[in-house]
Image (cartoon, rainbow, N blue to C red; front, top):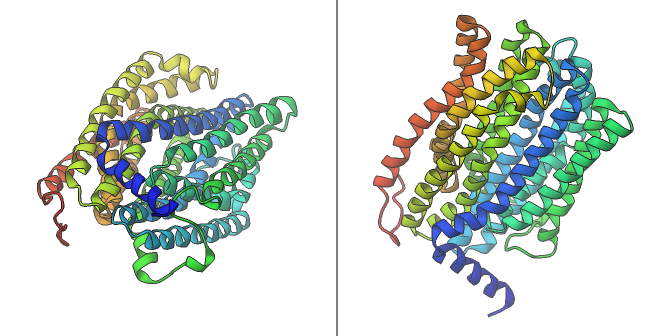
Length: 459
């Protein structure tokens, strides 16, 4: 047995024999750290830029929607490839896994380059579409220029991060993301506070940190430290490969893309209430994103366990992993939510010491901390269906939170209740999404075959 075969066997035994609770925590801890640091540097951008006024702070929310669009393509190719790779490795089909890895990586680079070209050509109307007011627009255009230049690296980094996670190599993914995140925080301080470059400094810092993350994440692939690899010769656009990546990854495109669309709609609804309302909702969204990343990190530890064991026909482990992740996530997010509810005002005030911003943002934050308990239900259901290749059901669940529920809610409630409707719409959407998701998962699990049996095509 050569070195690569011994490595593959050891990885197979680890992912199929380690108790699922222990395995999820082992894989989830590095991803949680990665998510925390990523959100910390998002909060750092918000903090440093917010010191320049409400218009600059509002620009962060607008550009955040742009970053969501870019990341949507990265997650589409990354989750689409990662799910296939993990299931192929579970079925001991390494060559097919390498084809999926190469096809997604180079396709993602091309998609990122296209975003750069189109984004720079249509930058001003795009910023208006994402919710810029005339006072926010100059800041948003300056900030977004550097984000667009970094788009190919952002997409490719998302792809590599997800492939590493699905192979169970979450520590490698953590090193790449954490290093870039910490450098971005330092860059924000240096370029904004020391060199006084304003939002331009925030944009440069983010772009450079994304390039560094890309380089660090690429190292395990170049050095053969994981089972899949990248080669232009392995790119295969035949339907069985390319369409499988797109179909399974499509829920991620929907989820991330709708996050950007929902941010755009939210900003449009908040415009009548001024830049303070847009800034407040941007800050509360960032804070809730930071809180939720703990649950998201554990969920990302669940995905490779789910996909690999499903591919190895160990269905009971997929089921047990799901319920452990739900229980652990609800307990953890419940504790975090209590803290956020109690200290909502001082939390928002740390980003913008403006009475109107604090009043609007704190109430929105309290609504969303209550809904944190329901978010693991929709998230884990979505992740489970996507990781095992059930793209249709995953796509439907992806549509709920930021699309089918949120967009109609914020449009209707903002007219009925004014600013209160804007503040509570996301929380109501999260609760409804969780309620819908759980029965779908329970019905699916009730029809699973016994371990070792072939999965029915129609299930």
